[in-house]
Each structure stands twice: as C-alpha cells, then as structure tokens.
Length: 206
Image 1: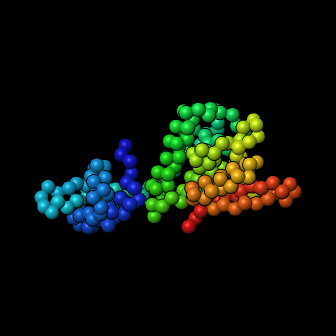
Image 2: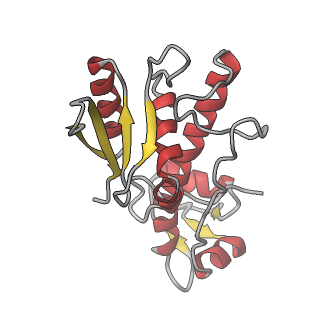
Image 3: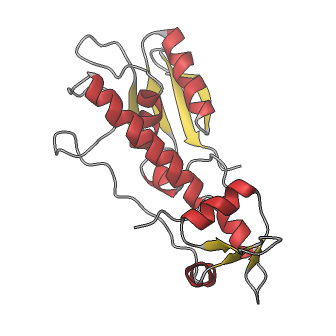
C-alpha cells in the first residue's frame, strides 16, 4: 500500500485548482506526488502538474485518523519500549529495533500533525510511559538494570505527565534535555521526604 502523503504534500493537493486539478508546489513536492501516483506532469510546455484521478479521490476524502497499537508487553515478541527495571537484549539488534521504532513514531507525528511539526502525537499522549521511554532509549540513554543505574519512567497521578528517575544527577539532566528536544515539557523536582531529584515530563501542546 502506498504511504499517505506528508502534511506538506497534502497541503499542496488541497490547494489544487478545484476544476482542473492543477498543482503548485516545490519540484520535490510535485515529484513525490507523481511518484505516489497522485499527480502527473503534463508532457507539453509549461509542463504543469495535475492531480490524477487517485489524487482527486484522496483530496476529496476526509483525512484518516492514524492510530497505532499500544506497545506489547515485554517478552511478547513485539517491540516494547524499555521503561527501566526489565530485562532484555542490549546488542546491535535492539539498537536497530529502537531506531526503527523511533523513526516510525516521527513519521506518525508528521502524518497526524496539521502543521507537520514535531509535537508528540495522539498515540504518545495515550501511552505516555512508553513514548517517553522510547525517546530516551532512542537517544542512547541506558534504562535501569540490576545494578540500579539508569533511567526509570513511571506514570504519575498527574494527567499527561510521567516521572523520570535516574540516580546520576548529570544523567538525569541529560534525560530532561533529550525529552525537551523530543517535544516534551520538562521540569526537575525533588521528593518531599527523601529529597531525591526526578524529572516530570508531559507532551508539549504548542
């Protein structure tokens, strides 16, 4: 099945002439639409681009709501983000799996964002712990293991917020910087009783 057009390509299609289907956009956008079979380049000068019948149908149809299933539990044979404290493979194959999952999530953001930006998407807001853990693992942070070191991502009573704990203060600040770069709002706090530092993170909305 052909991948859906990106948000930018969809905007080009939506702006096409309602009668002729004539398109205006960058050469890269137009070429990508041609490759997807949604547009064609007229053989005669000035070689304008027009929507194909498939392009017209896609433009007239409502944009689908794209969802993905929640990550399965570890050990099920399906990719699951490491939230810290679980056992699992840490070799090259795991690195490839994490990279692939992160790239897929970024593509999901682009497909579902009306502005084509990098804000966390609906799936991430529905699976906060897994989403934050994936962002951390994809950036190379180490999830907690038997030695006690590494990050742990846990749910909190606050809506749309997770807590990230890491015994190493520098590593904790690095986790916060990673999440902020990945589109999360972060703030460092201290446990009232123990004084232990942790990061509270929530998906950025604007």
